Image (cartoon, rainbow over all chains, first blue to last red; front, side, top):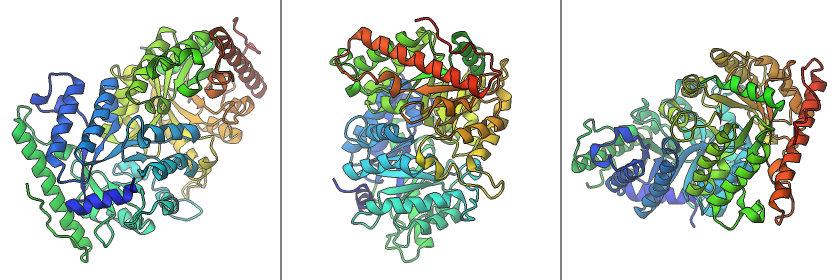
Length: 307
Length: 307
């Protein structure tokens, strides 16, 4: 199988879209027409509808595991179905689980999400605090199965300053920069034909300066930028995470795209139309910002795939 | 419901045992007599047998989520059953998931493992990298439902030096000490009648000096010490994580207790006897080390509950 990095870039170019849709099941906030037939059925129907609406507009979806886990076994069944349904629609799946552990336990997580059994996702978000060797089993799985990683570097919340921003004595620079340098090295082995690595990073859309600096430290990484919209992140800030070629990042929106409809009695058609419009507007917004920050980018902008 | 800290201490005193058993399903390494009837049935039978063997010897079990997740939905069904089966046997459940995220996503994880629906565990391991506000939803769940947290501070792997040990400019001390101080503050609100807090920490059994220092920084925290046996941690090193009252920590063994039988053709009786003997030996080893390091401890030592 082709490397994850290349598969993602191919999708981005084909759809001229740097946006992905987050899938965070919140059953009590779903439209009435999908509810009432149980948790599993509601999540499944909701996600299939969202993905039908955006399959030609975005390269990937990002199911957030926490929201599935909160529904117990039924939630994990719905996760399994969501992954399969995404693949059927030609969408890559970035499982957002912020997992990690050491040695054989990290290996078990890699088996769970980046192997070929259990949940066969395309990429997984992981945390770096346990050190370089904790990432090794994930990197191995990426090599073996053409999968990808996004390592959490700098999050969009206020508390991201507590430890991520601590300056370390040896370098005089924030901790997240030490981690970025390590990731850059680690990613060298997984650079695909696109010139991008399958070892990426997560950087919140609320810190443009940090984004720019990290972009320099890890030029080949693909950056997952959550926090657009609901968490206060802007396309302008996210644009700093892109390279001059207009590539190297994907911007994610969850609530702002899928739970923005307001009225629980919304019809199926109006819901699909709404999700599609929100997504198109976001693609346009992000592409415009990327063009502005990187004037040489070869983007058609504003890029509006036909509805 | 009583605070988690008090429930744990009560169990520790009643059983005179500071040891817990890790439950890491590895189906291909289970005895032949539990295999052959499918993943769910094998994990379930294996864990029920292990818990029958140790229910009077240990205060808690520590299922490692990664090993369940690697079996997909069947694995999560087995996790659900394992949690219920532990409760039926009077064992506390510390879900080892090293979860975390920000705002409503952290809340979803708290719902998943520390709420009353989904998986109703007694405590959860979480990671600190996302900062203090990322822990808030977990702390709230602990307050509301009498649950507990163990925040990863210092792990037993070589890579724990990469970021955890980085000295930060503001204090000149390792990062994990900044986190420990923050946890000490955070835990003040959740100190129970026992004098211990329901906000604890994870410290690997391979770093005795760090354990001693962290014990001082967070005197009221209960410390989860994994890595006894298989990961090279010793009772002597683990003992540094205890207070002079002989309390304040639990030492965990997984593989060394449950997968140490060697012969896959082992009989049910021999397996149960083996798990029980390993556990008794570990309890004795840890109690002796705790008495040695803290000579004033009120332990009966060596403590051997009757088989």
